[in-house]
Amino acid sequence: MERKQTTAELDHRLSTSKPFGDSAHIRDQFESNQKLRLDRLGTRYPAAASLLDALQEAEPDARHEVIGDPALRSVIMRMGEPAAQPDRSDLPDEQERVLRQAVAHLAEARRHGLLGEGGSSNGRLGSDGRHGWVWRESDSDGPAESAFREAVREHSGMPLRAPESADLDMLRRGAELLAVLLPKISAGVLSHAHVVAVISSAGRWSGVRSNSLFRIGGAVFLGNEAIRNPWVVAEYLLHESLHQKLYEFRHAHSLLKRDLNPTPDGTDPAQQPAVVVPWRPPGGNRANEWDVFRALAAFHVYVHLAVLADAAETRAQELEDDYGCLHDAQPRMTSSRTATHRAHFLADGIRRSCWEELGQAGRLMVGWLNSVLRDFDPNPPPPGAEFHLLMDRYLDEARRLETRTMSARSQSRLRPLMADEIRHAQRILATAGHRAGREKFDEAVTHLQQGEDKQRFCQARALIADSLRSLSPDGYVLRPAPGGSDEPGEALRNMIDGSSEKLTAVVLADPRSS
Image (cartoon, rainbow, N blue to C red):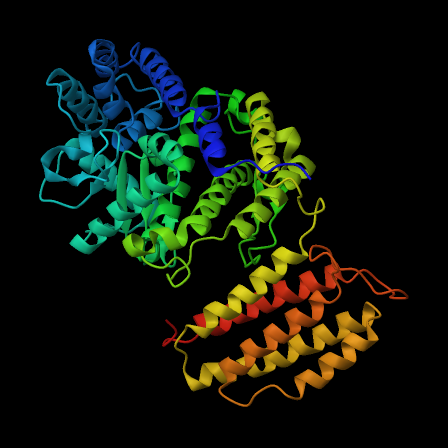
């Protein structure tokens, strides 16, 4: 058996390897890319030329603050889109004001980002000079703040939530914990998150724990569920900061083939290759079909989360007095097992489905991440295995249902759903030729405890999962017993996808569900 690399070794490797891990290198490449954009834009817009001149004269820390500012990045991206500025020789006033503000900011050598002016920040996430600013709403309406608010409203239709003192404390404790667990990765990756903002769980952000947007680079958005305890704050700060790191990398490298020719080709997005992930239900919007960039971004995150969770699980008892109990915290940090298995699935799925969509840098990144993953977990599941991931989703839905408050009427709607799932499980056991398992399951069904419908539904799901796992000797692939007629994997996937959709409808239809 190959030796698994230690957390310290992986912390060093994931934070120093060039060109994919070294944050300082990625920031330098991103800065060069932004200067090149300003140079091109400067031939049309004098304000862009003035900003480029100011950047050339500025100190590195000041350049970092300005180049990474989410408002400025959003403006520069819009300026470079022909559809947004057709045949214009002048800039819209709101964009020019942001550029002029950045020039003045650099001239005065201010030690904060543009969004730190006018009292719009509550200070940094931590003591490091490269830690991002925590956003708060204020009476100020400076150019950068207005541009940032508008970009957020355009995406979500919702304002940002003003963080309370308890939120600020939790964010800082989470950043501190991340630095304790992965000191080298933390020092690098948090430098890509220039602003950390708290979002309201409403509108397009309803139920969202965290978010990052390519069009609002440098900003990390965290929801209420992501700031409940230091362990999950550490996870989501790492998660979203890694997305920002990848965004900056993509600006300067051919991550995808289409990055070399960004002009839309008219291809229907529904026809583009995708990785179908089993831990997400399909829903009406095919939410489980991830295009190449989303799959690559998730692979990038899950490799890092596996290392973070491994460090957390190893040191949980040691750190309990300072950060609370890892295993009692709600919501829970993603486990190392879950992150590792999802990373392996995505690595295989990208190679199978999306390889031709990757640019040279993208292919090299996949190879690098896969080599790190193999050294972290030298004994991966079989390629394409998804049974264990489907079971994780199936049981996780039941665990989340147990914590919800539901009306008696809504609970009664779980009865036919439970009966349907039991029939599907019986059919799968019979099709797989598992007679003894079918008889044992039928007997156990008659002994489901009496109680409220929600409780019985969750007990039934646990029973179904235990029975179906008897068909998988390795825990990864569902196989028929000797003499079984068909592979039961597709039937299981259809059952779980259909049940997920029906369960969601029951929960959403209940006005008391929370």
